[in-house]
Image (cartoon, rainbow, N blue to C red; front, side, top):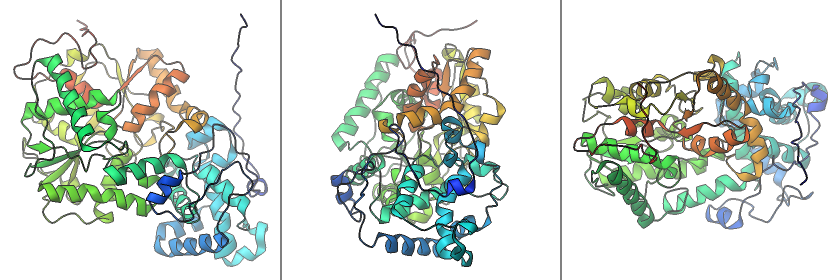
Length: 531
């Protein structure tokens, strides 16, 4: 039998000359570029210039006046978004962000340095929107050509919008916002990738990314309740579309469909039943995630609206959200400005502890980690952390709820109360400085698997450190995309570590009134207690 030896891959990070950087010569490598939109999705969402096109073709079939459309829209954004104009002007190209991007670290491609990625559009800005642009390359300016469009598409979708680079920028430049605006500009001329648009179209049609109809959602939740019954002997009634409930609960749709998300959903239902929470699920607002934020403000706003619409229809007081990363940047920072909160909603107050969640007063939406941490702090839960003795846990700070939202201490507080063995990854890889999973921002798709595995490499290496040092065997993350991405990443980097969520650990530790003796955890695996 022929023996195959894996070829060693050498990653060389290098800094290009700016003259080299301004050459729009892009090789679309397999595993790094995204497929174009599906015609059906683009038509349903009424995108401009719907057509068959292929990134590998020389002719992308752009509209005849594509350049005018692009520059006109760019002028509009420069006037509308003060931050965009500011970010175009103030970068001094110091390179402080250069080695902070996991895609640059993993690929060695100099155009994946945040400063260089932003320079791809900044050079167009200099050419058409500054007096120095007439000097051309001397001023770092270049003409907008079809090759530049191709380069923008290739690299704008090699960024997960994680914002790690902005933590290290001395001027606070948010390169992720620049990247998002580039994607918005590309959308105006009909250049949009496939993966995000599939989810956006499904969510617009049915209320969730998976395209599940009400019966499918109800059936999935009932199956989860049956799993809980088999585990605990407790029958749980799952309220769906219940008018007059106090709280609307919204989770990412993966939580009632995929694994390990399924165990997180078990944890939700067990907790809510145990504390007697007056809440409801909705089959219309059945998706907390918002892939619209990966393409354009308008698409994000369209999907965002359904949360408030359903909260008003059902007559709830406030909204509680589950474990998801980009869902929480979207809801924490955009929900109340993209769509005005219904006047029927009230400032969130826990019906169990009486705590007023002041930070959620504007959006009327509370994060599950805040909610559970408050319950534990007020001693409202009976917990046996020994039930999680099988797991030696570390926490991945997902970019969008940790770095972007500041939710750092609450998950740690909960985890430390529901399990006995917890270790942090290296300091420079957690909290605000956390490395991304490598698959966020619309990159969770198979055609860019090589990019994802390289982009996730810094996080995998940080995990390897605590796996070897402390025997960590459980990577906890409160993000649906992480839970989908990490199993592939850890298999690729040969790390025998399970992936799960905070609410799975809570469900394991939660002692429910009237439960039968538990011999297995939520995964159906035998409980192991370390004396």
